[in-house]
Length: 165
Length: 345
Image (cartoon, rainbow over all chains, first blue to last red; front, side, top):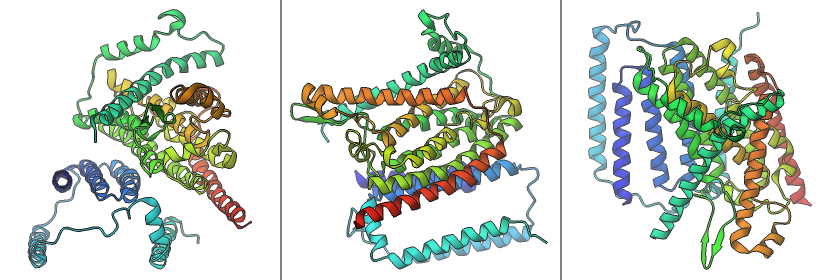
């Protein structure tokens, strides 16, 4: 039953992420992106990573996407005032896209059919175990990434501050 | 997974769903009665004795009204908005422990739909999703006032979510668990978390007022500036859904506050009651106590609404970012220092 649920949710994720690119209206794109994130949350739950699932739910669906939607609603982009792209840009885009497809197919070919992933510790995703891992063996990388986030936050605040002359 | 388990959960979900709808329905009546009481009026008294059939009459009126969808509205999203608002309001009840487990013979029936070990975070996630109903509805109406209101709702929600999350962190330091079932079970008798986290409770309560869009934080539906707010273009039962979702939200956040800080189904002397009445009646008494606490909180929500005037928008942002967040951070630091000292000695 687990694999059939996985394939169903995986198909949904692919469909909705395609809808993100294909829909003309930017607000609709963001809404499809939210649904895509929701299917990713389901994937985490299927992997028994409850904490990661709920954090993905809160941070991506609940906060970041709200801000995306916020900005897009304010900008109110319409088809009429969208700048027309020149033919050169279109040609370059098509070539770049084709290169990407070739690269992806090549790398998929190289990996062949991977073995099914077996989790060494299936309960790693529960809050207590995850916390013990993060603050035990992975203490340094965890703290470094939090410093990195703090730096980004300070940078964002500095950027919005008006310069005092 | 045996059939009895599925039936048991199904019945529990149905009962909880029914009760939350019923309470939300009668909250509309209670709100008008409380307002009348505070303003020295009588309130609704025509439908039935003391007007207790008023919610039914309102419901019928809402269903019978003409359905209007504006021509330039984004039709599909216009319909999704109220539905989403109702959905996110209802799913929060899944992790709340409504009572301690009932033991019949050798069968233990927990009065909680699911006790996931990230229960608090689940509630937090559902709360943060709540704004989508308002945002989508406001944008899809294709009305400038609705859009302004949707944007206000989004920024208010995000600002107060931060302070709410920080106040929950201090609570987690005290409880050592994220599962709502465990948190409530640990507050046995008189050991309610509000005694250990008074400041945390105050912050959490202010933030829940903001998250449920209740006065004095009901900026998204400020009539004097925005006509009606995000539901300006809505009519009929779609409008009804928006108004109804607000009352369900109020019920859910009252339940969350009662279970996180006020002991949920625990009350002093519950061991004595358990010894006197047995394992079927005692949990039900606990549930009744829990609902009393919830009603007290709902009354408090209404009391505040009819007492305190609405904030101005800059005051709202000032309170959220410059008062609540620093207080919440100070609360975390003080709590962790005190816990470290207690563990040391």
